[in-house]
Length: 241
Image (cartoon, rainbow, N blue to C red):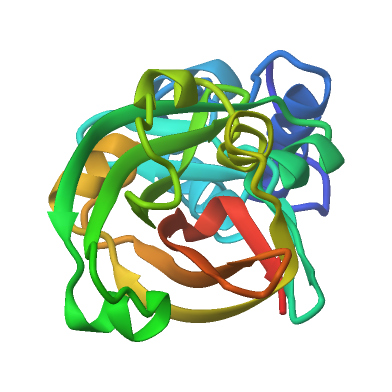
């Protein structure tokens, strides 16, 4: 499995094309680990410097991703999601629109007292208790988002969090509580570095960039419904605002 060393095309460029074709042909699927630098060097009879440059280029293009202490993996195509003034799209809908299978896993659910920044939006007067739900959202089993949801206890009495496992929060509100979200919403986006605890859940390297999407969701009567705080693996996601 040698490259053409007499070609005018650089060896690293030839190797990039070869690896991309193997990914497109399904030999290496999203989430798969590719051979190590040493293995690729031996397989294609090129120097490790050539292999290293190839991998760096493919990482820069978003084709591959390095995970510290683990190796280099095929990155999944980015999920495209609309977060627009009059056309918000849920994570599940965005996955399906991109041909991906959504799933979710509940990490915790506790009852807490609303903090001032939460109550500024939710406008709670008497019962200021919130359900605080933490979960990981995945596409084709690749974790994309670590999400915090804050919703008043009064809006979802007797909330059964187990029903949210591997399911859509929007669907649960609609079918179990007959509450529909407004298509309108207010969201803010900022970029930070992923903390170590979250990096583990999202299978990211510590210090990689994440997008922080905070959404303030109303019901169909345009009354405050809940707050979503999403920590998103930036290399796997694209947002239209």
